[in-house]
Image (cartoon, rainbow, N blue to C red; front, side, top):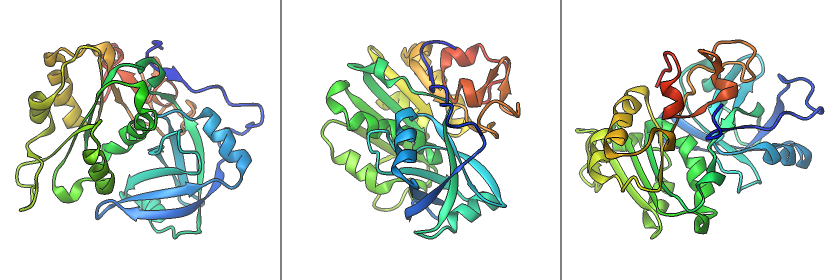
Length: 294
């Protein structure tokens, strides 16, 4: 692995069973869109909570599950600077996500993690940051954004471009409004043509085209991109055209993972395992990977 992306610390001897989850209590839940929900999850005790936050870095993921139903891989959508609980955001797409969505406040789900590598934000101190996200792929960047904003003085300018198919498909609307109101964040929102409402004040257009219009200067700027594969496919060439170095452009691969610990082989890409060597990669790394899905 390149030093540009950092792997999580090895598990302690206390965690002998790498597949053993812990019970997490649903402390809150909210609907982001008609089919996307955020769960706020509390740890069963201080020991588990401390152990998690000693290891967790933004960009890592966990496996969230229901006994008898299975597990799903989601990023941890909250930052390590807020240590009272964690959050995950997901779209209902099958049996397990339907079961997770049905959990009421006070009920439990299972969780194991954090797994994978992370965004190396400690290397970005003093740098400008450009976040480009589409649709349901904002959660991984949301964790980074809040981590940066909670330590705002350590970083340069922050620009966020977020797009969705329609206004109704924008997630974290309350937080988007909060970011938009800040004088130290430059937020641009866009929806696809035809997805706007009568009172929409954002851009109308696809993310790659809007990015070319509003992107900041590439000098001393780190770019982070998360979105549907088709969006990433057309966004990365725009960043390259604008002069953003491949080594300073980050994205994530998340759709292949199953076990989370490099045992099942499902996420193998060449000699790498996305769940262990990723999910965070630079574009420079992706160029060297055979058939990396973006």
